[in-house]
Image (spheres, rainbow, N blue to C red):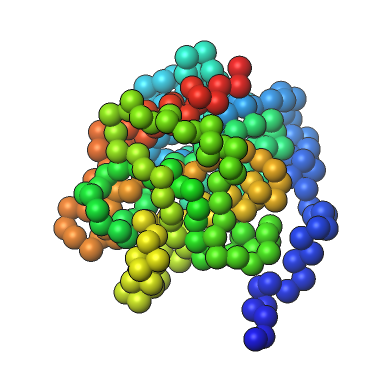
Length: 262
């Protein structure tokens, strides 16, 4: 079988010429940033609702050490722990670009909380999935790891999360997602294919973030907030209180408490 062109010349053992540390060095020079250091725990929030909520309700402030050209990093406190958050980090390639820069800037644990469309319909949304593995139906992961069907959360992170949600009065389940680059190409045949494989939901970031984490030996945990049935019903996309931010933070805070790095 002829190899797919995207898999050509990946050279997985060869370091990249373009490094996030060097980009950030030049960004700091241009922006006059002398502060170094961001929170050790950071959140990617593709929808941006959680970021808006912590700015309004948790006194989140801009972190002036963040030298990214594309985004702003807000910082807030949870039980004396500094937490960073970046909103509207949508899609695999953008999420991994930010992950590279976050870890190069001092992040030690990255949490992603993305909205997702329901595939296996055992309960009514909204609810949360701790993503244990994700189908690699995007391009970014193939620049980090050789071709495979799934990418996975690191075993040690999964083990440390055991029981962390048991006393939380929310629906949080371990599961599998389908990460796609093209949400408007979720065809009936594709949906049936992944349903038949037992995939629970579809989202846009997890498989690439997990591939990055494995290749770079970084700590990344991805969640899917299952909020919709891909607009196939009227009244879809209802996320809950404050656009789902209250419940999403309850889930994230359970993890932060368990992994506290301070």
